Image 1 (cartoon, rainbow, N blue to C red):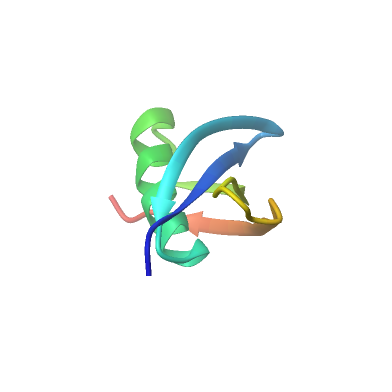
Image 2: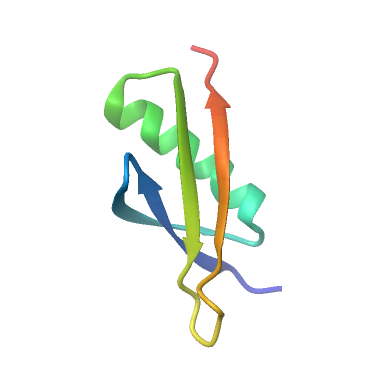
Length: 68
């Protein structure tokens, strides 16, 4: 299966794009990206699918705690 593209929604703002084969794999990548950018270890976000011909479904909310 090819990668799907998801837009990160954090604090009510749409952010960068993350690719993954499923929403859960994209969420793992997004959590690493968020913790590096914000310096936080705990946060909540959603992912909106932006793959061509998708229904643009929103997945989440994901509640993540990153181990440092």
